[in-house]
Length: 295
Image 1 (tube, one colour):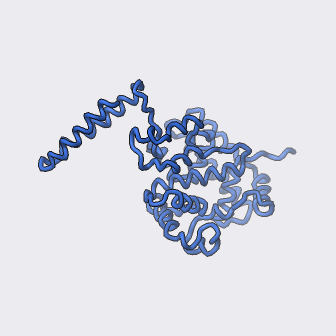
Image 2 (tube, one colour; image 1 turned 90 degrees about the vertical axis):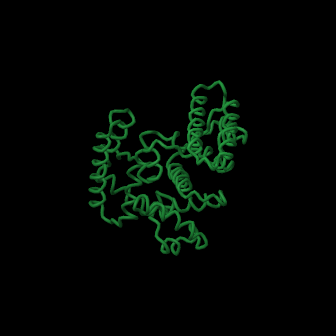
Image 3 (cartoon, rainbow, N blue to C red; image 1 turned 120 degrees about the vertical axis):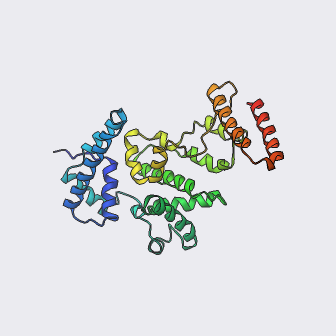
């Protein structure tokens, strides 16, 4: 009888149950996966977009959860064959235990950054991040210097961490060039046309750099949302992990309308400013009129 193939969704779930739930026996792991996969399939079918091709593919993955024998085989592989490199990084972060156990991943000197990351996840999702996410949060902190936007650094950490996981399973390298360019150009400091003049958009177009999530098979996105709670929240809110490159061509009607709408919104806000600040208002108004002429 040929061996059943298994989706990486279930390999990672088995690893999570072994590491974080401390399950040790095949029956309890198999039953947990069966119940979890069935629940996920039902949830997807009940979503408003449940009839989309993307959701149908994902539902099919969950409905075809691995057999008892396959689960047993992959438990053995994970335990004895180093099937998942750096498996300890799937563990949930706990200070100071995680630092004591893995100082090569999270040095004591980075405790403040690690605790900032953990604080964000506990406040927003009532759960700690994985050691892998904390690792990439620390790396992002190194790369961004004085940038203190914890939310965005957590978002970037999830992207780099999940890219690392996926590349362990795939011969295809899923590029994070787009996110790297964001870090290189410090795009969180750039507004409007500054993105264009900085050269960021030019390189994005030249190298066809795409946001990491846009490269992922839609059928896997639901799984990654399991380990990317912050990114899922952004996705559900239809928010961008900023900045989204804008098209600054004057011939683009959508971009023109968007910019005019933004400027009008600023203009209306200015009109509400206290009369005591009239001189500052007039200065802002002159700036807005100048921006409109240059669109």
